Length: 218
Image (cartoon, rainbow, N blue to C red):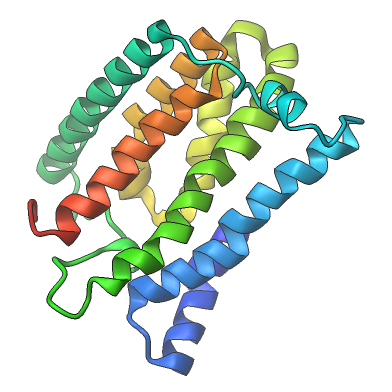
């Protein structure tokens, strides 16, 4: 609901009021209404569980307290398979879905021109809170609690809910990110490590933005 408000109500208002480009409006609305609150909410819920304000305890609660060579290898495999899966879904979408467009207007970036590289600086705060807001809230706080209830099917239940979270971005994007979502949730469950999510999410989201921004891919 909040993501819908940010994308379908806040962005048009901010763009009309300020005249800023739509992607900068997304940085503002997505960051302030969705990802920063998600990050803060995870800390509030952490404290409401009765946990101490202790960095080591917080990392352990959110399953960010360890990272082995095996976890790194699994993360790399996850990135590669998620990218390959995304490519396959895009090709299927282009072939079978009429007017297929997996990137809504507010997250569509064009190659940056001289004088526009400040957009990269503006993107960094949104990127940080996007990655760690979702990692803390979804994989760090919610996932372990769901694990108690759903056991070995948690990755599937969690993945379905996480996919529905992306509903305001439209069906085409939801269809495209199916591999990313379910590969990530399965590997997070397998490793019991939120860093796996951080690495996969960072690689997919970060590379997608930067490759287009620098004109490497169209």
